[in-house]
Amino acid sequence: MKLIDILQRDSTPFVIYGAQVVAYGAYKAIRGLCGRKPECFVVSSLEGNPKEIENIPVDTLEGVPRNTLVVVGVTELLQKEILSRLKEKNYQNVFVLTQHEEYLLMSQYFAGNNIFPVAGKADREGPFPVDLVMYGVCNHRDKPLKSPPRLEPFEVPIQAGAALAHGRAARLQDNTGENISQKNQQYCEMTAVYWVWKNSQHEWTGIEHYRRRLLVEPGMLTGGIDAILPLPYICYPNTVAQFRRFVSEDVFQALLRALKALYPKEYDSYQKILYGPYQYTYNLVCAKRPVFCDYCQWFFSITEYMETMGEDVPEIKHTRALSYVAEALTNLYFMYNRNRWNILHTEKAIYV
Figure 1 (cartoon, rainbow, N blue to C red):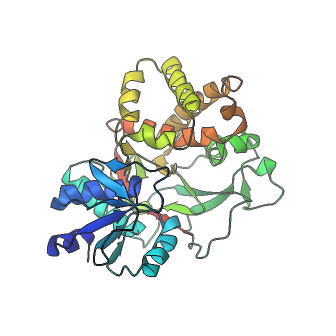
Figure 2: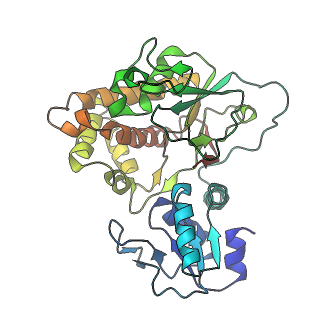
């Protein structure tokens, strides 16, 4: 049974376990779809979490009655740990927002607001209607997955940072042809994106990761569609706050300076998006070749400009700060171009 059906059928008080993007998105969807609010947001530790979210307290599990419905609103990477804690504390009324359940909830909410439309299911039989390659970025340091996914014929692993690696993680590597593989410590998966941009020529190009996949089917990519993305998260209080969890104020200000210097006419619109609530994450993208190239040209023009600030902002030069900038820029590009490109959305999967 879907979460909204449960909440509409049963008036039992509920809490949401989590206080970041998954939990906040669930709260907004539940509030919008059935008008209910949680008693509180539950966290394992108050450190690093807000004290309240839209006047709803953020607290630990102590004091939450055992018969309360607990909606687990965290990523798959944390769910096992939290479910174990709930079982240990004898909480039995639990609903887990798996990636699939989260997708069902958020797609229903967004549909009600007429934003972020989803792609329909496609016929998996017969020849592919388009030339598509989804490049799955991996690295020699990746931990083995307990349940690795079965790859589709159009999914091709590519090793990022091959120029710096001592081992081989995939047949295709990002240190051939025109590349920036040696910058992988700063750019992470984006060195593979650069390689795909400069060294491939497919009608449709996709980027995913060894543990995060965009569930695209070739049949979705017809009928005037320009790009397929995962549904965005809803950030509290805005996407800047989410971005600043991972980078310093110096890096954020460097990003703003780069945007203003390179794209002064668009800068005000970019600011509105950055301080807005919606964020595409994980750099999961599937796009027509012209869209993908436009995105990459815009993206790397900004990060290359930021590289020139490395002496003043050492994090840019010596840490993976640009990889976090990458998520902000991917979001910024596709949010800004929502009316330029015909963008649909599909489910993502995260593997542990």
